[in-house]
Length: 171
Image 1 (tube, one colour):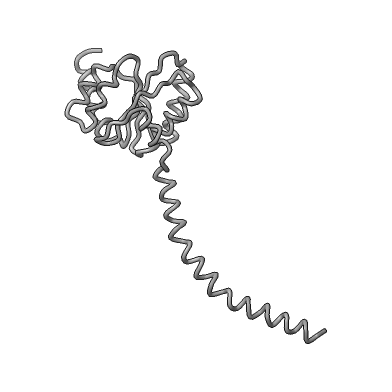
Image 2 (spheres, rainbow, N blue to C red):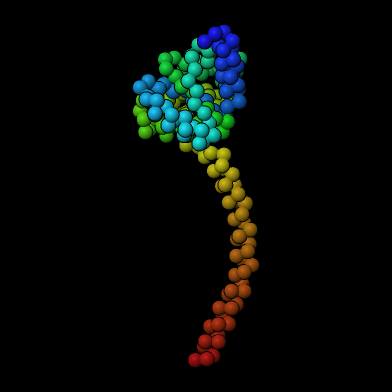
């Protein structure tokens, strides 16, 4: 890799560190190519990505970034899982590490906040952006359906009372 390629890689990594909602740093010693492809596919499906980069270049890219404190995690064979959604990459990494103990989560960052392994696990348990939107939409729709039910209820009550009176009169 020549100097121009290294500079381009540092720029790409810098963009990842700046624009990502969450970056998870993990060790991947012993993962097969198929397992790594599975991790990449899961991350892509969740709207994230996986990147293996030289630690030295990643540390250079971290200089001056809000998540600079995670530079200490970049030792050994590390892989970065990241996404714009502040929860997606953490969920993917956490689920994959439960199924495959060869992926060991070291920590990560969420904006300016550095996370340890327990912090990444806590973030992975949070609802995703889509789940929050659907919950809010459900909450907004609930009062309208309650009002519609309340408006329709008196008419059905009157109808059932009249039906009962008719049945008693016919008997």
